[in-house]
Length: 237
Image 1 (tube, rainbow, N blue to C red):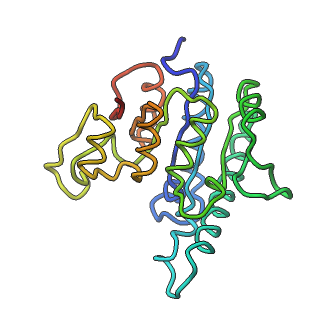
Image 2: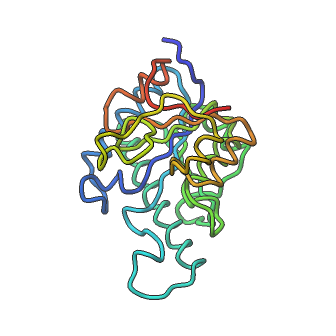
């Protein structure tokens, strides 16, 4: 079956991998995630993934001591690499080809990101997982996701969340929250909607890279979206 998107970059939080408690690994959640990834790859969509590290480390605000921001960001990057390696093994266990590349130097466990090799790997049928953020402090994994999406020429960045799109307020706390089907990059920035950080949205806007926010909890939403159904919220020009 033909899909609307040939190549996608999926961005997920680390807390999602931690399940209800948001910490460590919830392998029931990881099993569900791998099934969703496999579904869209079976349809012919090439898949790359960027994971956050919040299930292990949430930066300087999460620790009871003063820590240098650069050191904290490096710890967070290493947390994302643990998540990437775990997801890789979960995919391999389901007979998929999966490969991790990182923004950090970690030669004992994986190789550093290199654009030409990344594109060759994804074209060869590998599910690519990018760890280590951008490899630089002060940049979020949201920005890393957009950057990697641009570098591999993804058709769209998909942010998987607990809710089914973008709202003007937190729908879990405000039953009257309004959901948006489509928004411009400027709308997201001026409304301060917290979809992704400002740098990531600006990078999308400058390069006309569309963004979708959808539920990764609903088992079929990712598949339905890549098949062209009206799922989630779209941010574009």
